[in-house]
Amino acid sequence: MKKDLQLLAQAMLNEIEGAEFYRLAAAKAPNEESKVSLHELAEEEMRHFGYLKSLADKMANNETLTLEEVNEEDSPGIFDWGKTTGFDLELGVSIYSVAMQMELKSMNYYLEAQRKAEDENIKKLMGLLADWEKEHYNQFEKVYESYRNQWWGDMGFAPF
Image 1 (spheres, one colour):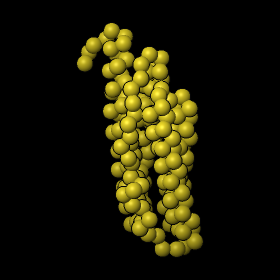
Image 2: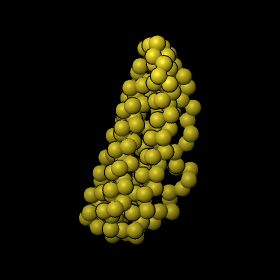
Image 3: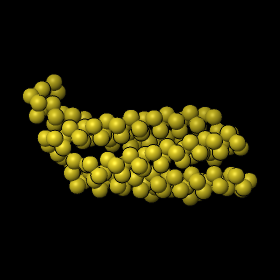
Image 4: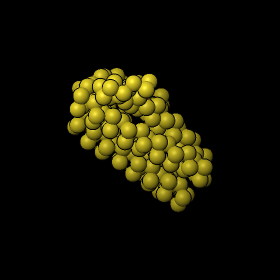
């Protein structure tokens, strides 16, 4: 149980870090669509934090853990990230590059935590969270590639 509590504690910190990054990124977002989507991601990360905290509290009180509260509505949505050009384009490339790295780090953490977890419900939860982080990564990768290609075009590079 102690190991699972430690895994949940780190998972909660990962979600807080993600939410804070998305809030900061939204403040500098290259367009309104990205700003709204980044705020939605921050809120999603905070919902994940709240859920993980409730599980950790139950576990600390020796209550039975269930994953019934997690549902498909909490899974990552598909966002319209919009388009941008010029200076904002460089910022967009940077934001999504860092976001991809954060999601990849979180996904890898959840996969490792799934392997280490003792409670079967924690194992399932970590697998689900890894899947969600992968979905975020895949979304960010598409936006990053689009912005990168736009930037290459603006710079006169055309390797694509």
